[in-house]
Length: 352
Image: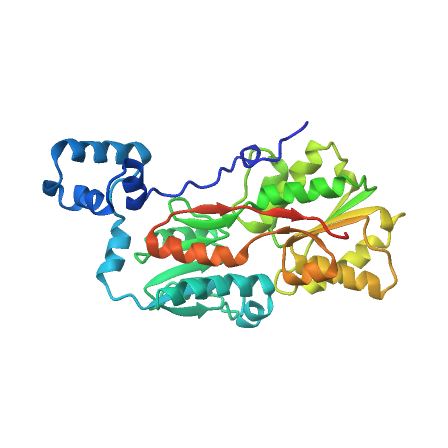
């Protein structure tokens, strides 16, 4: 059953950007000030033009300045917090995380605003405590569990989520499911005898939902979305699922995946005929290094995910995402009311 590798095939459409006052002015060929007056001082706008502005605004889904953004303009804004999903050591040593934080910092520097970084630091009550930050706006780059969703919705500060989703809250994400679909397609094109998927933590409940309804259920976490993409590509190609090994490893120490992969490869008759997808480049690179150190052949095809600089130097095929831009877009969303956006990914073919 062939499934087209498009976002629509996964039930996910790129989140439409919320129209802005500038968009309305451009559409109608009038000044930004005139559109602003239509919503804030309508008595200054001639009736026919006012009617035209309001009618067009309603048609494209713009209903006036965002009250949160307006509140931001009224106050003395100093600081934006990034609530991060790992500890500080991870944040400063993971290439993808560093690029994201660089994007955030660059965007804040241009606005002369400070960055407050709130790492996990192993606290069990990490998220609720982090939400009490004194920062004026919040970027949450951490998974939002079901029990935390009401608290997220109750926060009265400008807030944007990164790589996680809560209904009604703006989010910056990438096309994880589509990227995983394309990564698995690339591996399948080499006609492997066996496939190994090395996954980030998903959790038993999420895992079951994905496998019980692979075409209808779309996960709201990164690991789940990528697992869905891998699985759907396998089903589309009618690849026997009994010839697939799934490994779930810790995302805090992805290099530890190498030991589990080596152990899983040993019982296979032809380990050099294995296709492998890894949910991060750090996992894939750890596997490459371990196999080379033990004199074992690399997989028939190996695809990572993220596109970190180390992947290029190692010749690793990967799904590339622009983490720097993700950081910039997070700032733009939380401070300008730019709304949600889904950024693209791209398959970079190299030696694996």
